[in-house]
Image (cartoon, rainbow, N blue to C red; front, top):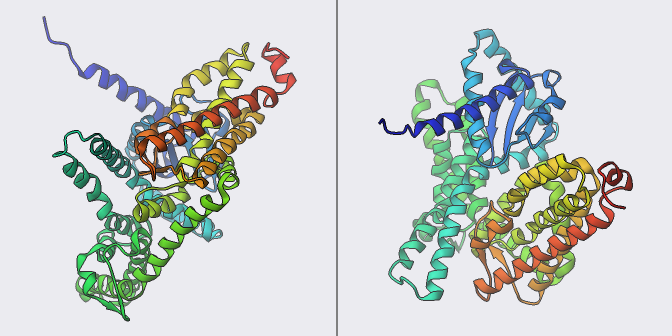
Length: 479
């Protein structure tokens, strides 16, 4: 009897994601209409040449699509974690398989230039998005190292496997000690420079030898300026490299351009950027601490209540540099647990809709499938599948998030602090990444209490105020 073929499941899975990509392609106007295909943790980001060729309504109703966000020429198609990472390469493969003529390539280049000029009409918004793109690829490493650090801390507190704790700390700290290099690399890549030169310049920030540098009477320390200094150094390197490409004779380009691209920004970094970025990083830390220490419940209420709209617009990624700076400076970010309360309000609102619309089997089916992801902090399925289309539940979910955030902020003001050692997860998935001034148990209690309040208030607000009488009547629900 032949052995079972384990590849069947894999082939079936590949066919599934390939079928999704194949279904998406014509709705996006075909391969010739796609300028770029990228993805983050939950969204497929597609830049198109001609928006009129995109069939938006059909795209939104395609099975597997949890939501669609339009932005200039770009479409953000919410597919959910795991799925998007498998559909994106399939869509890229289908696009590449069609082939492009020289004329088509020239047209694509012209469209890219035109699209860039149009996006530059809002430079600040574009800059924030591009900065977010720098940090998104770093999130998996931040999550992995954060969880390892949490395990090391737990073992140390329990006095278990003491010989393993230093090894875990070394593994967890290795990435963070060199994060400036990765930020520099990603910055140069995002802004059109040579990535390895951006990383080389940013490496100056963390090099131990900076302690020997006298920067106008100030002694530098390795890591001073953190990720902001690395970002600024690499961005400066991009502009220097561009100038060198224009001005340096072609025969000398291979020698002079790398030399000047590393030297000039490196000197500026040592004698200015590290000090300035260090002050900014410290100011961000002081502001975050002061905001919660003095604002307490009010600050938490506002932060927790406004985060869902940011997620809906895709602008929440602009907060990644702030979280990363806080983690680099203080070892944790106190803002993320508060912002995560928005997801709790969303879960509570979805549960209320499920109870209220007892006769609407289609909505209840969506909620059943999306709720596990929502509990683990992936909010897009519930946002685009339930609360936003219904209208009012989105507002009442924000109310739940506001009250949950308010409680966490209030407890912080009274000394019960709660922070996250990494970014990316929220909901229940954030528990392994929590850190508090008085130990893990207190941090877990504070965060758990905030989630509970978010669930309860989101449910109550939605149950009593989140659904119109007409909608309940149509669904066969009670008054």
